[in-house]
Length: 78
Image 1 (cartoon, rainbow, N blue to C red):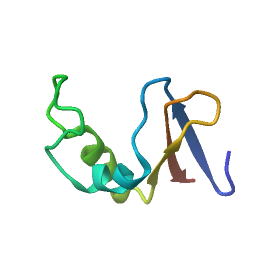
Image 2 (spheres, rainbow, N blue to C red):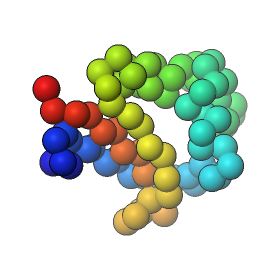
Image 3 (cartoon, rainbow, N blue to C red):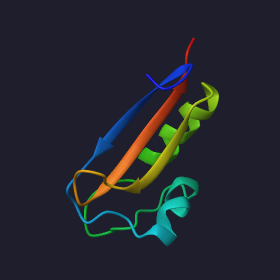
Image 4 (cartoon, rainbow, N blue to C red):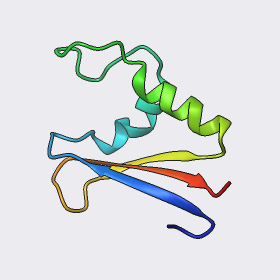
């Protein structure tokens, strides 16, 4: 629980995303930073669109407990 809502944090132990590219990945639809692996590049833009509709947000930072990426989804209480 976080104030009048909830936050879900997800961390991984991958290479992470450089700080200067974190905002760009949330705004660029259909492009991947790592084009060596399969995928459409739509996942994060779909997540941010859904969160916008429901008054939530996605924050991407460095991991706290693992060396990779930390993604925090925040939603307000219904």
